[in-house]
Image (cartoon, rainbow, N blue to C red; front, top):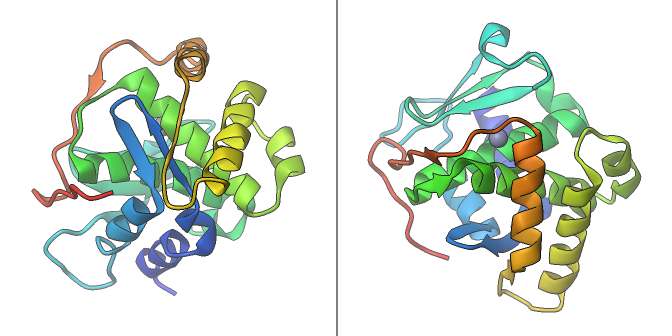
Length: 197
Ligand SMILES: [Zn+2]
């Protein structure tokens, strides 16, 4: 299957549909991943996110990277989606893409925190808490994802909001990862913007 359609299928799975949280001005939701899934296609479409396999553009410890200025996902290899960790990494990058689609300017450390929380939530949604514990994702992020998932499951359809303490903790973890102060620029996918829930 074309990589475009494989990512589209991932974004439409039940595991992604359950992700639903807010972090100050940032919203990450299953609806948002579904909207994003419409930007993937194996033929030319107007608002398209392209996928390339370019190991040289992916960081030494990463499986994938999203480039918001050119609306592209670069993958380390053709087989990234074959492993749980690889799919979780693509969920992380698609969280950046969802925020680009929403065209919200976000503090870098907050957006990275949100992307890692979504990545951790994906492990939990797959029933892989032990694999999450053994992954590179810090325990603080895993704990926040676990709490948000528990709260949102009792809260049908409404996003769980990170507490101020959780936001500060997530930002501190991202500072520890070396992410700079500053903002990401999000401008939609080829001008297309999603304003919904
Ligand atoms: Zn990231």
